[in-house]
Length: 300
Image (cartoon, rainbow, N blue to C red):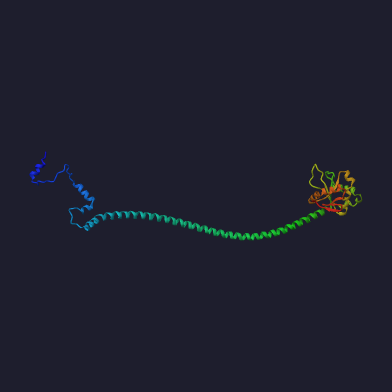
């Protein structure tokens, strides 16, 4: 065992030594001392070994040691921020360039559409002008057409009257037997001579043309139209035929040659004439006209 007390006596140390601790402090390693000094730069400037340094000198030494590190950090951050701003600026510039190109294309399309609209407007203006001219022509044509329609209606009425008048020279003989190689004119004249014996000698000269009506059919006997050269003799035969016993005995009869308009008019007038006859009134037709007791009547 080491004799601490004996050692002290032999070494000549003072008789009142400092009291010893049961747990003496551990020795401090050089590495720990150096790391603690590096971690706290301010401690190196404020130690008991340098009690003669002023506070201003200590502050200067502190700033000289700390500020370069802060400046470097800020410069690094500013550099990174600068790079970020440059990247954002490049991206923005690229987007602006693309938008400028797109805007230019849209502007070109808008200009093209404007040109097309102008061309369309010119075409529409021209078309409107032509339509106005056509409208004027149509109005003129409508006026002319109205006048022509009135003229045509008047001419049609006139032609109908002329046709009706020309047919008053004719009579239709119905019931005359139809044969092959038949002398229709000769047989018609012989029938008329029996209807009006007093004009027997005149009829061969008064009867002009005689022919069958329409195409031949096996189940129907066609009528014979007789055209007279003298209206007076035709009317006399027509009056005599109404009471002719010869015609009734041979199932024949004479009829007036009427137009389609006259037949339709007589069809509408026939009920009025028939009712008048039932009332013992004098009712008769004269062409397409009907008379009752000497007064002309008209269809409803």
